[in-house]
Length: 288
Image 1 (cartoon, rainbow, N blue to C red):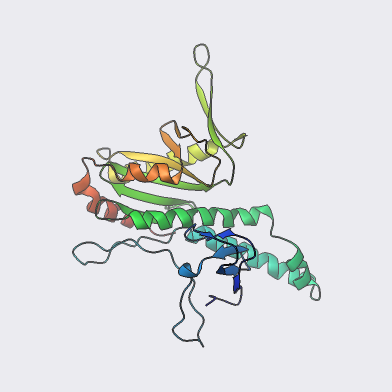
Image 2: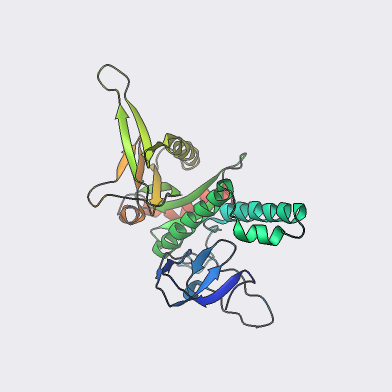
């Protein structure tokens, strides 16, 4: 059953991808079309209403498993929540502005025009965080503890995902650059200082590495120097080559989800510290 009046359950004319779990939804299969975000949601990710007279709540990312002793886990956060809120705020603000300026034609104008790129970028980012967060929650166990959408104190910025594992803490920044290829450009060397640039689809996006390094420094200051902290830029739906592709820039790992998951599952010397580190980070970095 659709979650709101903006959701429509229908038989898809074309194949699509569920915005929550990333599963392919084939053509002619029943699914939920979300008019607001212009995306598709599979029926398994849709809420089931207990009372047909009450609206169903929006689907939430599955939370990680509880601790073995039965105690409730730390506040894990919801992947992509702050980006989703910002997109919805901007979308609603534009709709209000258009309807106020054009009382009679506002609805028609909204139907035939799209949100500006500055607004849709928030939706794109939220989708990437939601999909990666869903998979990280599925991987979560006693040896892999995750946190999502953590607010950086004193700023409006956030950390997309944190994973506490036997090999240390991973600061994961999810990026959704559809069909664009990340690559590393190295300049200088013998006679000039060596510099590294992160290119995505041929455009300089080195600022993404800078941002992750700041997050790594913050997390390192919280957990202490005895625990390794690794920065990760995880590109979702990017144009990765069949062979190779992953690389590192100034210590930040640049890769895709399936390349990330084995890293988090590797055995290491910090297993006994996982629970304590997880609680420490959840307390120091509240949900955004």
